[in-house]
Length: 250
Image 1: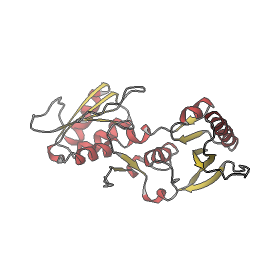
Image 2 (image 1 turned 90 degrees about the horizontal axis):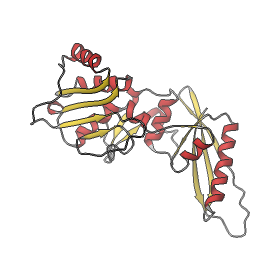
Image 3 (image 1 turned 180 degrees about the horizontal axis):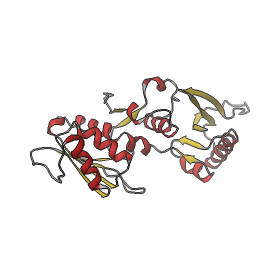
Image 4 (image 1 turned 135 degrees about the vertical axis):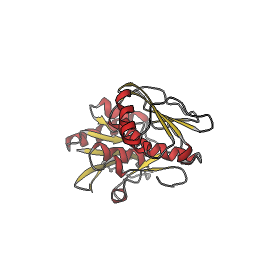
């Protein structure tokens, strides 16, 4: 089972014994469900005591059959220490790469018919191919810089969209580089670079489809929720939306 976990600080009333424990709720989404866990923590409790309560709570969730946990910082590392797999926001960034790139262009006011995009990746996987296909029929120029599989992708782009292999575009066309980073690669935020990792384009978030949004826990970030749905097979990359700080959609 996949689950979400959060801690919520609450004021402890003077003279009363703290009795609250882990609050669990099974939330149905589509054809299945996920477990939402909330651990109330007394305000002012010492860091070590809070950590012990979190360890206890995660152990209870493991006993309920939870094998993968969606959790915000700072408890992600603790979940991994306890042998639980964690959901990463990068899943949504990679699978929503094409939508994210279109949003990034829109946020800079660049018309698609004038845009030059360049995909950068170590290898040509399904996320890279999906991004290329979304952009191939929309932008003016599209090139790829991929260590493994570049020739095959260039051939596919030529056959489907008539895009010939190219590495540069006329200087009058604005450029957006779209990079699929390697694990552990430092996130960069250059003006012409969309790095497909959390924080790789400030203000960009990925949002779940409308039918699933009512079940999102209030304290859970949109991108993390979307990544959880993707990793559990509850939605497809085609169901996502890209949103920015102005809450426009793509």
